[in-house]
Image (cartoon, rainbow, N blue to C red; front, side, top):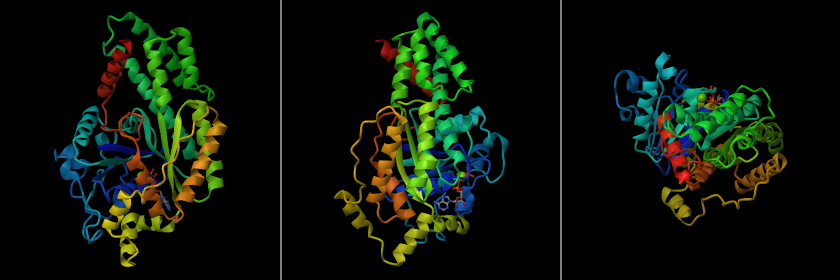
Length: 411
Ligand SMILES: Nc1ncnc2c1ncn2[C@@H]1O[C@H](COP(=O)(O)OP(=O)(O)OP(=O)(O)O)[C@@H](O)[C@H]1O
Ligand SMILES: [Mg+2]
């Protein structure tokens, strides 16, 4: 299973719209589950007009299995059962304190059950904001998918904050290795860890926007050159990947000026100039996408039936044939070497965007969702830095993995 969280740091940028329609697009050929983790104000219920017999309330409070909380589209929405591979898990209808703010036990219970679900993709729709309940469901080596829109410019900078918070979370867990007693006898590790801890504390509480993780590593190296922990931190940072999608996209120039450039600039300045940033695509600003939420029928479903009616849609066997001939796949881009300056990275992003637009001439949101779904299907799945994650890891899992990595590097 590939778990892909969708987050933004700010509200109203289109997380739910994107998560829902991406999941539907993926479900055309893969078993896909959409998890609604907007546990306070579940908007999925407004986007899809279904009775939702069981939801996370029943899972946490009534001991119903998570599998029994899976809800499929019904006959009113999908009369021909075209999206039979798609199902969702809704959040509770009402505010329930220990579900909105997960208790430790609830969180572990949910993570364990999610990891046991049988699906090819699990897409997570997060709530707005930035707290542990969001961070704990993000991958450790990449961001999952961040969403921005030129309509809400402030969201761009909070997405960059999310990247920083996500990295700090892993570094802080690294520090926990000592607290968990993993190194009780190894004084060298202890010294390295306490140097890291002091520098991290300074960094976390600093308002200096120009200080980033690259500076932090230089400081650490000043204290303990060539030590294992520094190597791990360095490698981790070098391989960390940021993935994003532009929603309500309307103009290359505007999006580049208002969104992409400030985002890259902020990441370079406050996180690191060594991180790779991948634009997965964009979604056009389209009234029908907005309307679909009002009707309670997802845009991708409305569109599929509309096209079927017009007999414009290709049969499934044709799609399969095209895919097997490689015709429906977006062109694979040759990777260019990223030089470590924000200007180069901004130019690269602009070129990528232009390439993508040229590739995808019939530009409507349905094509946009399918394009991103196709790119996701082609992405690597072996490293923790590839988009998403294989399973959701608890803090204990991450600590054990970090410990294992340290031990290995020592050999
Ligand atoms: N591509 C689009 N074209 C037109 N309208 C859109 C598009 N994407 C989202 N919208 C509209 O923007 C509004 C906000 O979208 P959505 O609820 O998906 O955002 P969100 O990030 O999930 O918000 P929240 O943080 O409150 O959960 C909705 O009214 C939705 O219909
Ligand atoms: Mg939402």
